[in-house]
Length: 296
Image (cartoon, rainbow, N blue to C red; front, side):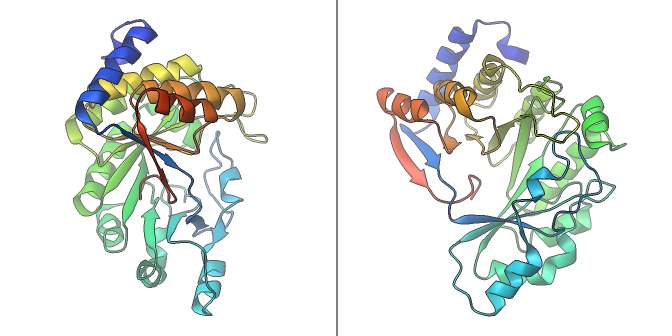
């Protein structure tokens, strides 16, 4: 059903809305994730220097040692949950398992959303002991994996790790639309795989260029292309919750995309633009606000 079988976007959105209305409560959830803090287990270090990130997104994370210092001395922290991520090693693994003892301590007081990368089954099992949720980037295009991440593995490796993680944790696959410098490559294959394998929910995020990275001169995918993918996802995964996550372009792009996402039947949006908030009410949806990371 790639691209909605060639249907015009308006028709596709209408079909997606009907499916959403039939399968879900008349409610949309908006997320302002002030109660979740992002934490890095590697500080600002990453071995991959990916084309879309270049370590940029690690800069705003709280290093795990600093968090532990504050927490162990009894400081009152303003969060109820933690997104635990970090840079990758050369094999695409975020070394969260090295810090399992600390994570066990934290799990007694915080919900943990772990972002582990391409872990083996033993690590997946250990992660399941402490994680409230696991976020996993599901990439099913070999050229994208090689060009963007510089890894020699392929789509089957991502599917293998996804299956392993699901044996032990609640896993939320993340689909990065336009990861290959704004071009769609393999995104619809992710939808096909999830229709077969299942998920807790699908989190959709959207590439945008970051200064200083290899893709700094690229453009995000067309808004209509992203909306088409969201609507197709709703049709292919009629009962699966779909979330529009925090990583997506800002400004007028976000304003247009967010409104289209509501029409496409998305269940949860992080930091929605005003047009989406207004449209949701016009369409008869009750609005509920959440304060934690969208998968928690």
